[in-house]
Amino acid sequence: MDDFLATAVMRWQAHSGRHDLPWQNTRDPYRVWLSEIMLQQTQVTTVQDYFARFLARFADVQALAQAPLDEVLHLWAGLGYYSRARNLHRCAQDVERLHGGAFPRTAQQLQTLPGIGRSTAAAIAALCFGERVAILDGNVKRVLTRYLGFADDLALALSERRLWDLATELLPKDHLLHNMARYTQGMMDLGATLCTTKKPACPACPLSSRCVAHALASPEKFPVKTRKLKRSAESIWLLWAVADDGAVWLSQRPTPGVWAGLYCLPLFADRQALQAALDPKDEALLTDAPAFKHVLTHKDLYLHPVLLRLQARPALALDGRWFDAAQMAKLGLPAPIKKMLDLAGQTTRAATCSDPN
Image 1 (cartoon, rainbow, N blue to C red):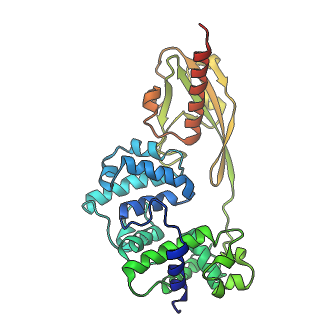
Image 2: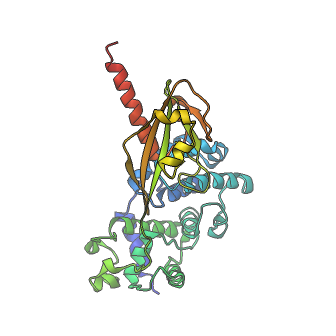
Image 3: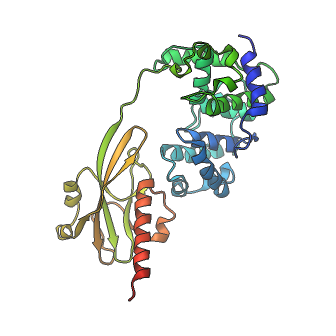
């Protein structure tokens, strides 16, 4: 294959690509790695604030490795896919313990670390160290399959391997320390800004003159992937136990499972199971709060909070313990639970302030 694609992408990136994202214009593997993990399944606009907060608290991989997991989960809360945060922490510890605090310089070595797959490893190695390795995230798959007219079904492992091979053939061949970073960033930028999933801006694309999908006037048919994950739904009952001083009973979620590693109201499959876990004398104190829906990528959660107001802080026959507001502020809580508790706290404060007595 000729070098048209690589040259066109690098030239376009230099003049028209993105240059103002906080993880760009750096060869620091810690920052590149952190951004790559955060950007998996998450929009750039959402990641920017989280990225800044993480760097403010964990300036380097050593600081992250030495931090408690609960603090990492607390800062991650709201980004979702919490296995990423747990792997992030484990990876930092392995970099510190096994590699003397320095990230490995090759994609092959990077893939041995927790949470780093082939494409993420290649992004770090290419952007930071100039290794000639291809990335194949969602944006790059879209650009390449459209440019090549690659119509093989990416639901099949054989098709994915073939696309990896083609992606590698198209990489720059010289001045790699400079060109691999420019090209890799350019491919990501093209997919994010011009070669979008719907209504791609083909007239502005530097590849349009040789793009097969553009010539066929069917860019939205690529990439081809027939296997789609079906959405599911699940109903969960939450025991919302509140002491008279405002403390809330929370337990840490097991791994694996929904919200693994986070602190949460105790979860139950139905209201009967929730009642069975309580002292019979407390059942009369239960009040059903409004149910609400929380949307995950491939599942809808229907959450049913059941309020239990108690005097003092009695011991409950459940895993967990009481946490006051100051303690909860330092925990990793699932986003919908945190939002519910925050709203309840605001309502309580407002009622207190308006009470003439």
